[in-house]
Length: 323
Ligand SMILES: Nc1ncnc2c1ncn2[C@@H]1O[C@H](COP(=O)(O)OP(=O)(O)OP(=O)(O)O)[C@@H](O)[C@H]1O
Image (cartoon, rainbow, N blue to C red; front, side, top):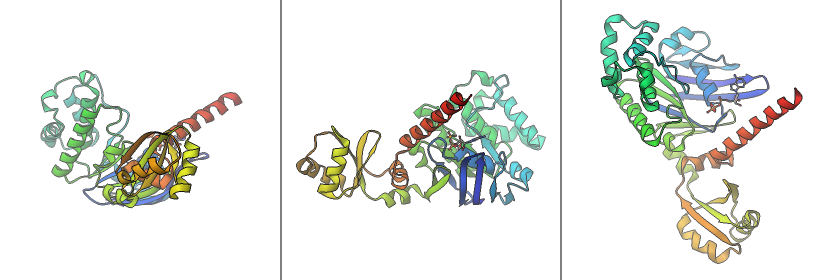
């Protein structure tokens, strides 16, 4: 349903997407996971024909994103990070407007509207003005709107960002129900690790490149070992001692010394007996997608986001001092 080959996008000196290749099967829920600034939105924008690739090739529903933009657009639905509903109109009026823009046959509109509003649990609010809706209700209505013209692929850019956990999980319920009911492929971006678990396959993106691509289970199995994190009074000394005593390669992530071992829980008592460093806290966890990200990039997603926001601040400072 989506074929991408060496797709690249540069903005001046910034290489936002550095030649990514992947394909998405019909009916899949495919996730793009990565920290802020990894290039997820830029990739989605190229696939939706909203940004022109610098080089490379991509097709969506069999149509080339460079040469058949109208065909691509007819077959896709979009839900963006920034809301684009009209707050003065009712839910139903917003959907009607969209149906007209997409040239949905008039006779089909009422039935389709009922169907999509029921799917996101908003049919009984169809006559309410959208300005009175909560953030979660608006996002659900945007999903319904993206489906009005029966697209083959639904693109969702961070569909749950800024929503509370309960609303996030209800949005996911709708996404899964949607996949059951409609023959649709879903392509989404997220930087929430827990949400990426709900995807059939995920591509992990960092600094414009795909660093890993597989099912969540297969990616976690690749990490294999448990993650152990220790708080210490001197992280550098602890890292050197771990290497010396156990031959382990540890790093500091989110302020704690982190390393991977098989059977982490059994290993912890040895740590206290054999490591000559004061330990202030210990945690052991099964591999998560954050560990997958770390095993491919050497940092956690949160650390990567801090790095990228520091870099943005530095560039802005440089621009301000140059003026
Ligand atoms: N129009 C633009 N002009 C210049 N640089 C851009 C533009 N759009 C994106 N970038 C840069 O390209 C890189 C990738 O950005 P992109 O928005 O694709 O990342 P992202 O993974 O979607 O992050 P986020 O979740 O914050 O949107 C960043 O360094 C960003 O600053």
